[in-house]
Length: 200
Ligand code: URA
Image (cartoon, rainbow, N blue to C red):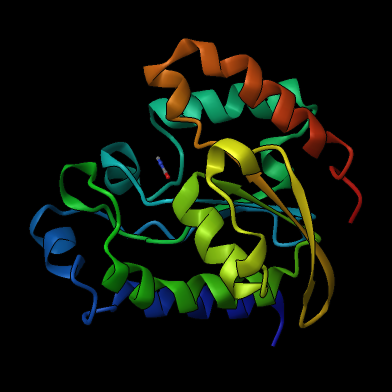
């Protein structure tokens, strides 16, 4: 199956994911599921936490306040948004933007795994501690897990089913909304990603 068809199949599964604890909340609020968007041939895949209100209203990842910061950081690193793929672990909005629950991560995680298998990125950049924890565990890097305050900006080598992969842990762009002082740190960490851009 080609990438377009396999990604479409994942979106179709997400649309009818009735076993999700967030499915009813999605439908009663007329929200959209947020599968992810970007290049199917992306070298770099960004994995965030879960959609917020703007994302659920539009069906697009990182299109609200956190998205504006992400766009600024991508530009500063010389990366074009259309060249990467951007998604989340949890693909429906949790009420009040609360942290995702273990059950939600369990339900949506396999869809993220299938997206990774389809796109076959060389780099996964995790945004925030939930994405870092999920991806590091999935790529057998559990023993290297550290608090995000220590892990941010570090690159971890791992093996995907399709070849070598680098995992780069980043703070979630939201931290810059609450604490402006973190922006230089985020900018420096994103700069480490620049060298992987456009090398598919
Ligand atoms: N925060 C996330 O983790 N993902 C989004 O898509 C938006 C905000």
